[in-house]
Length: 296
Image 1 (cartoon, helix red, strand yellow):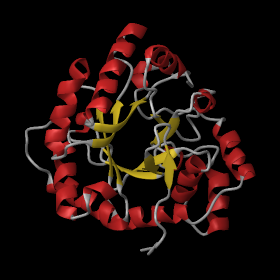
Image 2 (cartoon, rainbow, N blue to C red):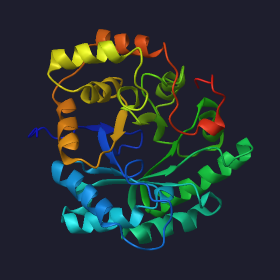
Image 3 (tube, rainbow, N blue to C red):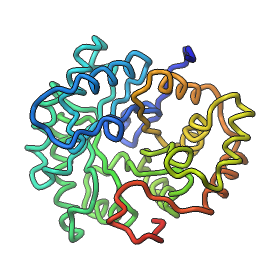
């Protein structure tokens, strides 16, 4: 197992909050279908392992049903709260965001989260509904219960509608992002609006979407940099200024992912992967919300 001394670097959001560029997700690998109040020790130990390795950016959500485990893991890790960057998201209780954040904080055993996100825009049937929800998010930030507020799975139309009435702009948009789902001009638009981007599912092209047109270039670059294709996939995301959220239940794999902090792809190599990825379309999440050929 790799022993990587390199710490995960930070990026700065539009509100001045520093966010680690690599985060550990408590969804996909650890998702629970329900919340009966019990604690899944496997989830707790998985999160503690990530923290031990230096993953201090911890990404949760009410819909994952793992907020209780995340809170327990943080307590048991003994790492000071101020050293951690904790994210959670609202979806199930989107109609009452003030209540939702209080419920999440109770489960997390915390007074605040570092980042609070609207998990998806699909609850809204109008721009006004997006704007009403965002106004509630602004109140959460003003209350001190979230240091930073943002969104997830938003497209340009959702961001534009939100910004039209916002007094505090979203700091970040967390989206499924990998070579087979590059979202057209979305990242470029976010840059013009000073909204950061975070990627979940960044390893998709080298895991569940294989085989595909990026396989050869990924393999060549992995050989060049003496890393796995997983680290190349993470680097492709990060070298575009995007925060990467990944997960695994295996300590060795999480340790190996930290090698992505030790090198950079060249702009030409990033473009090679992007160009190859454009030859295939694959969406791993929210498929029911999109036409099969919709690349947005």
